Amino acid sequence: KLSHYHSSHSTAALSSLCFIPERAFIRMELLVISIVFSLILLSVTSQELELAEDDSPVVQTSLGPVQGLKFVSPWTKKEIYSFRGIPYAAPPLGGLRFKDPEPPGKWSTVKNCKEDGNSCPQVDFFGLPDSNLKTDEDCLYINVYTPEIKNIKPVSGLLPVMVWVHGGGFFAGSGSYNESGPDFLVAGGVVVVTLNYRLGALGFLSLDIPGAPGNAGMKDQLLALQWVKREIAQFGGDAGSVTLFGESAGSAAVHLHYLSPLSTGLFHRVIGESGTALTSWSVRDNAAVYGFKLAAALNCSTADSAAALRCLAAADAQAILDAQQQLTPTEEDSKNSQSMIFVPSIDKASSKPFLPDFPRMLLQQGQGSFVPFIMGVNSDEGMMALGMGTPKDEERIKNITNNLEIFIPPEVKNQSTESRLRFLEKRIRQFYFKDSVPSFTNLRGYVDLYTDVLFGYSTAVSARAFRDRADVYLYYFAFNGVFKERITTIVEQAYNFSGVSHAEELSYLFVRQKVNQTAIEDSREMQTWRKMAKLWTNFAKYGTPTVGTDPELDSVTWLSVGNVTTHYLQIDKSLTMVSEDYLGPRVALWDSITPSRSGYLQATAVAIVLLTTLILYLTK
Image (cartoon, rainbow, N blue to C red; front, top):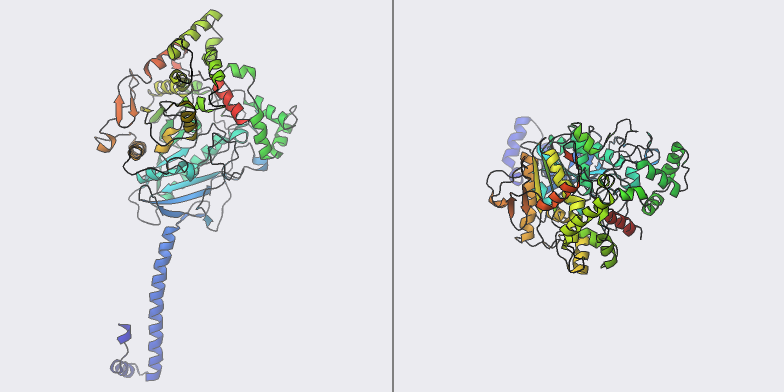
């Protein structure tokens, strides 16, 4: 139309009407055409900019603007907006080392948040995380994955939020996308948050003084939850509907948040995978002993707490990690099944204690958030015990099974005669091994024993302890698919023993670079992946993992634990509700060995040899 705009007739008519000379009018007409084309170009450019902003969205937080990345998941074919490496705390350097985290400073320019931030300094844990992982003490970063953003496209309503706390024994792991890519969860209509927290001595050292009270890593998680409460609405998330979930040490951590008075009101549902607050490895009461042992190992003064802290705060981070690996439990702790050294602790020296007392005592005092809870274990968690140390070390297996007293809880040992201890040993041997000697062709009892004392029994105890406070849903993950953790592959190749070991369920919740990159569409693995994601996101959205009769979930109804039986959902090739008690006779055995404490059974039967072997493995 513009090319036909100029005609002598129209020009003359307009010229006479406006009393403008024709040459001047032509110049004006060219100016108009130029302006029109400029407007068209500006319109196109604006559209291109809008697309660019959509691909690299910017969200304004209270601390400053962050720019993320939009991508289409190759697994779900759905869009995800990711914001990775957002600082949620000031770098814990220098005088902030070992202390409670502080909020970061504000920024005015747009911060690039398209890649994972540094992971926290750590020792290797069975090859996890990636040996090429970039670590630094400046590591307190949070990641947000969302299907919708308020300022990019309309949001019908704020979405439920799931906050992930990674595992790794409190000394390894990260919230990176390569370890916990939440594609399937985000596709379920939730916002997913992952995070890093300080690990090992840098995260859990205590000198029992205000400057180093312990639990810095737990306080990191707490500050991250406070960040979610304050900021998540800008990413399309509902701060009033937060599900806190974690695995192994991360599972124990979310249990501790469930009980901590500081965490009340920051979440509304909890999922714990293979780990509880009621195991002896999750909490330590004499943490300062190891804080001073670490100081001595670094040639710091141990005569004065303040001097020890100054020395430790100035030490090289790698030197701290190296010294940490050389520490071993005291003989007394070894006897009492407390061999994990730098873990959460009773932090009464803190001005704001995260854990003012032992978890069982907090339960007895009525402390806790008392929100709906999913918890469970994998069928063959104990395979991890076979994968540590030298493969096919028959002497190690014989030494453990010939010294079953180590599995008896310390409070039972302290109150038992020698004949009573021999009787209990015989009961354990008969139950798991039928009086036979375990060998490489007879490992089932060995795996079951470690499964029970490390994870299974404490999970059953926790379910019974919490069920009077809110709905508790138990699961038993038994799907033996092709997605395998490194530790599982080691065991299967060395012992020809196949099973579902520790952390196997993670590959059916997250995209994990080392594990499930070869998934085949419509395979049983992909079906299980979708089922797990739907169960977990249903829980986050509705407070119950199954809603109505859903063919995608095999039309099962996952019932909460009853007052009489601890029935549970078995997750295998299909989903099945099992009406029998969780782990049945195996839990009954440990119930008969472990005393009741004020109505709550304390699960303290943790195998010291397994944990000691872990320490020896890491120091090689």
